[in-house]
Image (cartoon, rainbow, N blue to C red; front, side):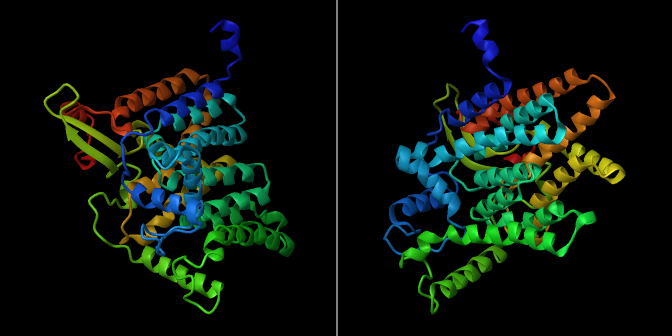
Length: 415
């Protein structure tokens, strides 16, 4: 490759290539369904083959999340086959696209190519982002649509922003937590009037709800969906179905060895192990192979401080960039504290990650205003990258000697 070609490769293209490569490498490993893939990948295959979620006997199956995210998984299955690569491929593509989205958002927020590239790099070398981009679960799609929502919000295209949060809502209900925040962010208090309020309600409530109900089209056109004939008409049947889903989510209090209260999420108190096997084929007496859904520790722990600094500066300055960052952080994190008794998992925090990174970028922006500290920022990102590479074996399931695996378990609660 000559120097002229190297100069034509933009930094963001290089970052995206790096991110996509790690998300696709050995994507079909481990074999078989891991963690909740046994639900979502099977539901996805049922959707593309029957239009509705059915069990293995062809009967209706009760599912507790809307269909859209599973349709996206199903696209990968349709293209690449009903195999590990097929059902994980869409996650890899959407996870990589999220790196581009946070770059575009940071560039609009901070008007800096350097800071935008920094945000993209941090997303690319976060462990939780990598793991969730390599499994057939719904949360990576939810994070993508939340990022897309904020991107269009920053462009002041509220119709597209409303559509994006509608797609997020059609993936997981937790997207709904952001709708009141989006309304507040887009209502201009000094110019507020009834017409503006009504328009925003249409854009951020009725439009998302219309998209949400459209995502159930397979259930409507089939007579095999769960509770499809439980009411006097399809609308009342869908209402009955949703009451059962709500009952499930609000009463899910079963004990699980990897359940994690939201208080522990930011400090990585109890990351989720998606896969673990022991063996002896790594050249050592005892080997370990794990996929641990956990953020890159130095990034997450630093981001806690960054969020606190962002809050402090926002209180003093009411800065719009800080407001956007903190609004996203609040909407993706704080609502989980309402459900203290519910069984929850750390990997739900993938939707918080972009705003943790943006809080760091906000602090970097402050630092650059005090002097030329680009090298300090680059050094920080480099150290986070080293931390990411060190933990890479337990992010993507590379078999290593047990002693090396144990050395990566920095906290007893990670085991």
